[in-house]
Every structure is written in structure tokens, then in C-alpha cells.
Length: 304
Image (cartoon, rainbow, N blue to C red):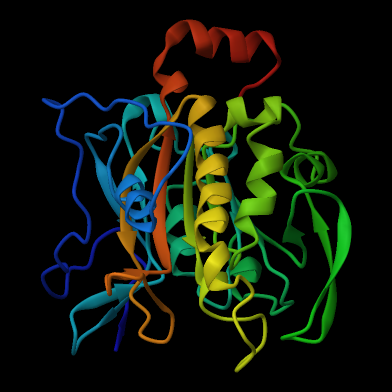
């Protein structure tokens, strides 16, 4: 096993790209408001909506036997998104929700450099925070509101907050959020209902997140029945589709999606077709490519 903290591995050839990219010849058109089948939902997820000229893999661990990566994200480094415009970490801000002991992505982003805030419901106090002046760790979670959640699987009560509450509590009001990374195990849907309806979302440049449908095939505890019964699968996927459409209504477009293959949690429809119940999404805020929109953000008080 080889750990990779740099932008790209120099030890061996990188794994093949697990996703298809946008074909500029075929203009993306908006889907309807409703999905009629499980397959339609997953086809929608896997269809890029826009392109990025410079995609960079950040972090991750390379399995030498399978030549597969885990724990990585892709980010878009096109200039309007502001990830490479300065050597001052104060001019680049990343909020990373859901770390789960794997800080390779966070380490790579801090190297850009960016000011990086990591959040997790487990208080594992990552050593990197002690070594890097531009990295911070917060034992809190992301949700659709400010509250305290009890997590049965870890037997802990944890303070939760919305994106806005975290920003205000940390004194980050008025800062552009260049990267919002979210990997919070099914809780992303509740969180993004709130985020996508908040004016603060305009100040986010890109969203790298893992999305989950695992509730359709498993329960909250090991060996417990699925949280969503089979006859409600389409309703559950529709609610997720609605959240993604809310994100897109704010000017975000999907650059890529790829499946996270987990043999324990496949979803098999009535036709015997298998779908993976978690995957990685990258959205970029296309408004940031518009000079008039950027001036409006400045007028509203947003800046580095």
C-alpha cells in the first residue's frame, strides 16, 4: 500500500479515469422535474453537464494490487474558480466536512496553499493540524440546522450546524468558499436542502461530495433492515433528485460522477440491473465565470 499526498502520483501510472467527461459538441439540456425509473436517476447522475479544462486529483491512497484509488476527490483548477491565484492561504478557503481519519485530500488542498477547515463527528485530532498553520479541525458535523445529533453507531452526541452557522461561528463571514467538500454518509441530502436555499451558496466555487443511496439497501445499524422499503425506492430517489436540481438551479453544473463500488451495498432493480449506492460528484459554480456576477459578490461583501 502506498499513500499519496501529492496532486499526482510519481511512483506509477495513475489509475484510469472512472468517469466520462462532458462533450462540448452536445449541449446539456435540463431534465424534467420527475424521474420515472431507477435507471433514469442513475443515468442523470452519470451525465456531465459542463466541462473543466484542468481537472486535478487531490489526495487519496493507491492500492498497488488493484491500481485503484480511495479517499480522493477531483477539483477543477480553471482560473475563475480561484484555486491557483495566490500563494497566500488566506486567499483560498476550503471547508471539508467528513474526514473519517483519511486526511490525504485535506493535506493536498492545504499544499496549494488554502486555508482548510476540517469537520468530523469523531474527535480524532489529526496530527496535521499541529504541523500546518493553515489547517484547523472542528469536532462538529454538517446538517440542515443547528442541533445536537446522537449517533448510534459511535454512541456519541455531536453538535451539528448548517453551512451558514459554521461560517459565522468561525468568523468567516464575507469570505469566498473556493471548495466545499462533503462526505457525511447520507446526511448530505438534509444539509444541501438548507445550503441550496441559502444566499451564501453563491459564494461557493465548487462542491466535491459523495452522494449516497445506501438507505435503500441497508439500515442504520449492521444487520438492520433497509431504512427505505423497496416500494418507496423511487420516492427516495426522487427526493434526492429534487435536492440536486435545487443545487443546479443556483448555477452549479456537474463536471463528473463516478461510482464507489461496494459489494456489500448494491441496489438491484426489478429487471436485475445493478446500481452502486454511493458515488462521487463534482459541481462547479458556473456563475463564477461571469464577471458581472463576481462584481455582484464583491458588492455583497464577499472577497478572499
